[in-house]
Length: 416
Image 1 (cartoon, rainbow, N blue to C red):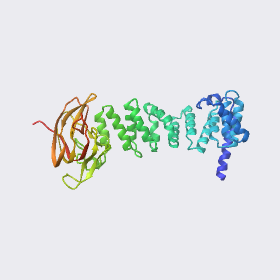
Image 2 (image 1 turned 90 degrees about the horizontal axis):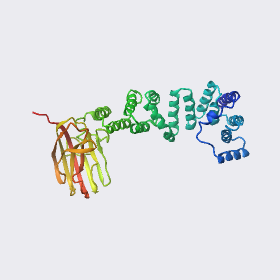
Image 3 (image 1 turned 45 degrees about the vertical axis):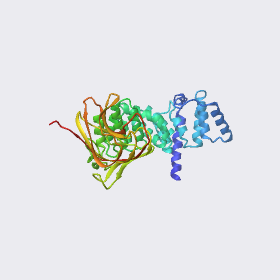
Image 4 (image 1 turned 45 degrees about the horizontal axis):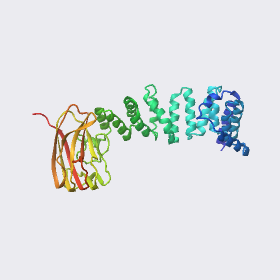
């Protein structure tokens, strides 16, 4: 309690000194507040003060309303607000921004306000404005980070500003200091930056800075966002390398021209991994099975009256021009459908996909057996993928039954 009283006494000394040294330069700081006060706000403040003169918020409202017309009275009202409640941070911040306040005193006022209200986003943002004027950019960004942590709703206001910092080569380095602390908002921000940045180079530089961190390296979500940005810009080679660098040692054991073709590890649904979705009336995923497979697991797709066009399992491939053969195994379990399904390997030419090769139509019932796909990749392809799709895209029918897949291998055929 004594420590609290001492701290309050110090604050009173600082704020009283501020009131003594300031003059009428209030209008400059007033511009920092968003919008003008309404007549109703002023009337409510006056009414509150009639009931209780010790209302610092009401005194602050009246002070703001009189900045232009009666700056002397506004100063007196601020002084009264602080005297009523010495830790009234909004009044302290307002005093710090008066035109003729000595810089050193203004700094102390801001530090005092922040120390008493470290979790008030509005105060933190106002403090950032102060340090921006003083040219302390590192402290500005740190206060923005604190404000984002204190109140996630400030993201709408601050994320665009931080994006500008990230896209400016002269200020980008300021982000490194805050990312080392691993703030909770960072992943959301980087994901937004990867989607909206004007320059891919900006995203690349921020991600490269994150990779240098020993205490808080890029998260899988950050890596996914960066890979998606690179793929969107058709920077496939770089996207593949960034994705591959994020794999664990165990996952790297499953690398090949087709990743995790044995389905022994869970699909990652990102990058050049299997991307598997289960729309309504379907279930898809890897399942432990004891017979007919090479390993312990296989991919199972279950249909329970599915009646749309199917295209919900696929993997991006990274292939050089040339001839290839894919081999795999499948089991068809009482699959009732008129159209059936096919595995298709295709490549992107401009904005359209061109089929390079496909399996036979999958329909009916069978035990485990092998199947092949032969294909030739032309030099003009920009992206490649393998995908399980409805064989008949003209007509959709109701599908029941299940499919099992395992031991997919893709190799290049060399000329003899």
